[in-house]
Image (tube, rainbow, N blue to C red; front, side, top):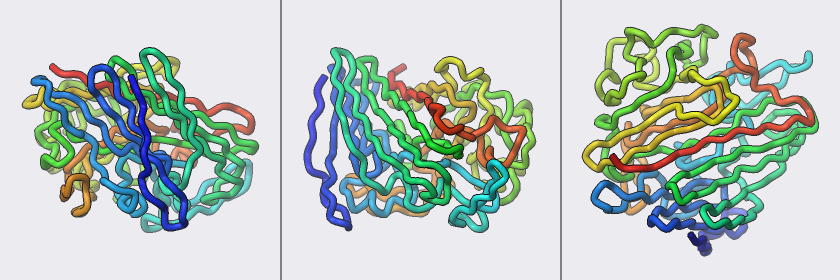
Length: 352
């Protein structure tokens, strides 16, 4: 295994960014930048041994500085949607940026994928890790507490991309970190993902209002187009005459994972049969936002000159449930002062 680094350009504020690339003995390569702790590329083989980059993204820093879709991004302080862009904690109401109608999406400014990170590299015989760390000061984005956090990306010899989230706050706060990579196992510039097949280990999902804020209910997937407990293609039911799918223009829903959170378990699988590429998702987070890039307006400056259209990629965002800070029946996204925020997500790549 080895890791290389090279300049990735200068930010608008004059900071030098670096691109880090980890390669394992199988030839799998993953690249990251200290600007935004973004995953820039994931290059994996198909069943014939041909390599392709299966992560949507940009060739240069300029693309990531205007990264509206959040390609490859670390998202925080609180990923997903918060109703009314506010929450109450310990009797005090905290106001956030209204950046999606009346609601808050993915924390607001400064976005965690738009800031520079300190970097540390760790090398083992069968794994190389890169740790990005930063202090989010008290009341940044409107959230209380100085939140000292790290995201550590590791590539293993088993073709696993391991993401470890860790953080501590000096005040009670709300935290929900995730990764917003868009995957297309045919290759990042190969068109839509409707022929990809998906399995999700979830008996329920959380339905939403029209603005995609959860109602607080839990609905069974049984007998609905939301059921992925058996492997099926994304395109099979995506345009069904079914309320939740019509609201979101496809899949953009939180699945209630059938795990207890004590251990990292397999929760989802993505299969692209023509290439033979498979991605398995493991986590100890309680929820998974399954998003089929329905709102992806054409991105014309993608890698290798690609133009990314609607449904060009699929996201598996491990998370606390959306608006958990305002819904008591959901697992709590409150992080108590001095307690550790610690979760793991693994994307494992193989061929069938």
